[in-house]
Image (cartoon, rainbow, N blue to C red; front, side, top):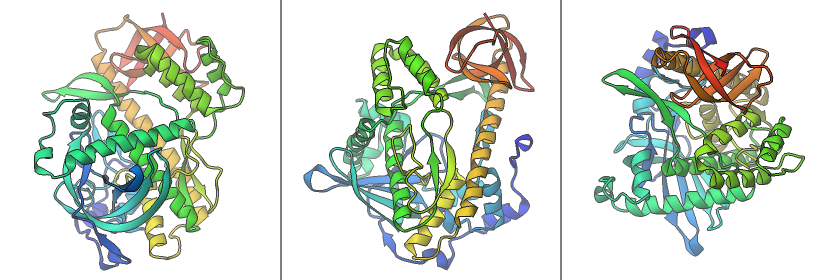
Length: 470
């Protein structure tokens, strides 16, 4: 963490400030709607304690629904320019490693007072959207409210229940209306997703490694695969983030946007499609690319995750940018969204906390708390620290994988090239799911290429895993 410019520990001042934190009277400025009576619920990982958002739906006329997403009012407990804010502004993100979590905020906040726990009254910023049957969002408003989480559900539970396992959700018996909420949520998420896909949102399937422990001993790194419930929440959050960006633009506020430009390496994507007998347009075209991806998903389901990884690597990483009011040029190529601001995870991401402060100032009809030049500095720093956090997570993951692979020197693996630059060429194997460096035979290898590699050296302490082309 320290080597990559991240703080692994909170200062004594930050811990003291967090322990004493409470919502001051000025946190109540403006209207606070009482929505505690609604059937709010959360869906997250089984072991997640830093709950950032709740949701609920209310059907209206002609098949439309009001979709409400409530985001934890973290700003009420983390004032700007304090010690907690300084730590959050330095790291800018929680760091999730195979050795443990380094939270952006002290746990007394992130997993307690600012977390939307079940049966706990909390302040929130609500994104209220009118979603039509075709998946379009035709109206939205934002406001502050008090909310109450009626049920903490898990991705795996909900996904399996939606697929037909009727015995997995005991909360259905104790929370009136929850079953109908889940079914309408599933339908609305599908409508939102299909609306974006008709405009070129890319339907890819990528996997990340999840450490598996037995009796506190690492035994595997397995794919943390997407499922129906994860897709459901992702679709709701994309809609809420887009509505947030539009709200700030309409109020004449600058904002932090999440930006993914059109692919610089479209020629490589064209060549990949051509290898499967598909001709893409010469200019970047998300609709045509998603059509190709859909065809490959149907033709080769088993190989689709690897194809998705190759496409994602060719698209390149997203970044944070500052947007002046009315700036419409900062869209997200992969999501097919023209206005997009991270806003739904303020316990875990600093850009979301900054956005929340902008939203609350706009709602209170105050001046923006950040000028455009300050947002530009924050955007650059958040992009840098997101990359640094990723490096820490990968290095610790490699250390774990090197320990798991300690008896497999000389073994051959199927691999995908995930990075190719003057600094080195990197490949990813599937079992265990991990990346390593291609130290021999890397000539001509490029991002997205499929190779067979042989494990030649390990250093668990340094997190080094070295392969050669087999």
